[in-house]
Length: 544
Image 1 (cartoon, one colour):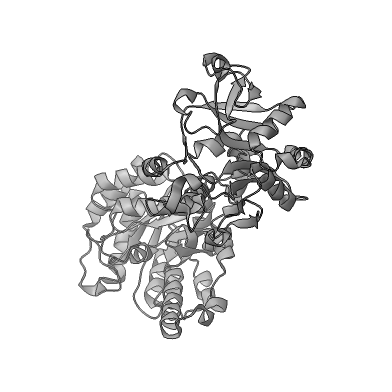
Image 2 (cartoon, helix red, strand yellow; image 1 turned 60 degrees about the horizontal axis):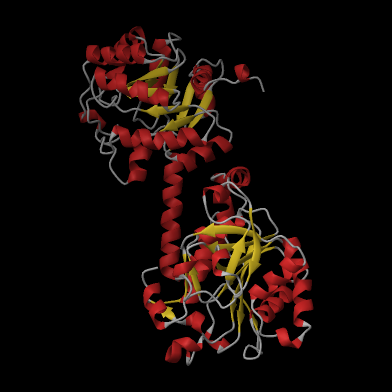
């Protein structure tokens, strides 16, 4: 659509005010209620001072500051495309405050403001209105003029609310003030009445004629047929506080029902489903934005944690549980591993259990068992995991049940596009006590500035890599694309076909991939992981 054909919110409101037919706007007090008003078909919103203060839990006596009102308005404006008329009380001060208010309203795309001719701080018109003093008429005219001078959008409207009837001053004073406010530049007059019949506002409209648009708020004279307002030529009707009052009644009823029944069945079919809240919040837009802007990384990625072994080196700590369930500062190692995966959005986690499998029962995980754990090794467990996933293979990160790691590790793995990726710690001299026997590696490029912008691949892996050729130690992390997972499942079957390989570890798989000239991408790091192989490691893990 041509942007020139889209009316600003201020122009939309002015069109409502000047419409030849009677128009209606409805109260809202926050972003959610504003969205509901818009969806109901209203062409404008009344940002009620009573309702905004009430939803903050304070009185309608300027107890909510004008900046707090502005913040609330910003949410309402952002949530909707229709214009908002603010109930601006008395303008929150003198002419200077009024000018600043207008500038701030325009910045937030608010279309109009209504100010009333009473004193600051204001009191709600329906609380002993006849005892409330009116503002000085000339001072109020100055406030209107200051507001009109401050606005930059020519369509922004200032509505002057005349409280003469509320304060008991009668028709003559109402007309006198309305005319003065009109001459001062007010775009419309809101004539207010606390009577249960429309006599005062009809008398005013008869005397006023069509000098400028007249706005009414029939809260008290609610039984008056709407056609009466049409016949007398009013411009705009405000349904002023009914969204708030309806919400309060429903919340009170719901709270009482919950207190009495102590279960949700009493109210679940009487309240909006959570999905409706998500819809009003436009959650779908966020999900679409995530598709466009977030790294694809963890989406569609699962994890396999190989945790079948006991961990004999930890002695009594693994007498009744496997190493992966040993607690570090009150939290099992496996729970910390799961937390790191969850932190980057990986929730589909398959754990291969073995020794004391009944002790591995953390929630929200999928488990398979390697009951032959005593006679088999990592490749056997990995093969069982890929067997389990067969037909549903996806990008998968494989790691050990005794290696803690920073979320940076899976995050970086997820962002790679190569089919087979491993992580290597280039600070291998400090890692010899942690490195698995076959974990030393040589790569196409050592960790250096040159490697920073280059794609590095594995050249050899194992205990026989010459010391002067070692570029790092394999950390126990292997990422396989869905295609690679399917292919490597076949490679594992070939390796394990030889019974001599039943206790083999993943380094032997990497060796076989190199033999078959299958590229294995290498990512370098220094640290960000801890292989728990001793009681000292368990202590060190507390500070990881």
